[in-house]
Image (cartoon, rainbow, N blue to C red; front, side):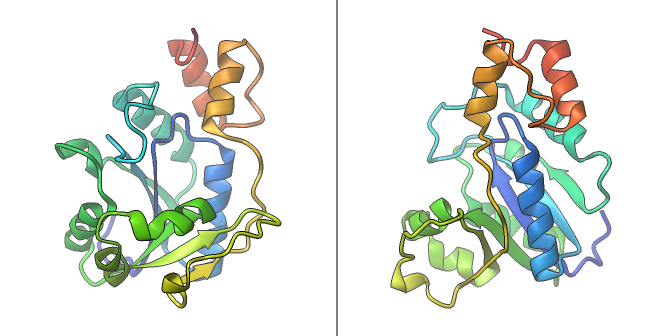
Length: 197
């Protein structure tokens, strides 16, 4: 990707597997913040999900690449797979600043992550490097901590109940997932037997 991009969204996750709601959230963020692109940062070892991933990093990256291959505004990012230890967003943002000098970074998160954000490693450092774009859950009345006031923007987004956990369960039960994930992801899961018990 060229380094002239100025407004870059970052959507991190285990993507185990990536599904349509992830893509919808990224599209909503592009529209809301006029982003040039969204990097889908694949978590290698997320500190908040200890050994929770099912597919290997290589399988998750392959599914991510298949999901994004037809959208010029999306790009898979395997930067965290090349680092040792847990994947901390603070370090990822530092690395991306070096890769895209002068770019404005926007971290795309769900409301759950915003509420938990004060517990992240070095949240102030993250906020200095990126603006938070938050996709709220519909009708969620939970209150954002006052310390976060003015440090994020809400993205207009209608969240679905689709989850990676639910999709893995459907695969294990031999139920259809074609409406929930991009076609290339469904094909890989079938062909490689990912998530089959």
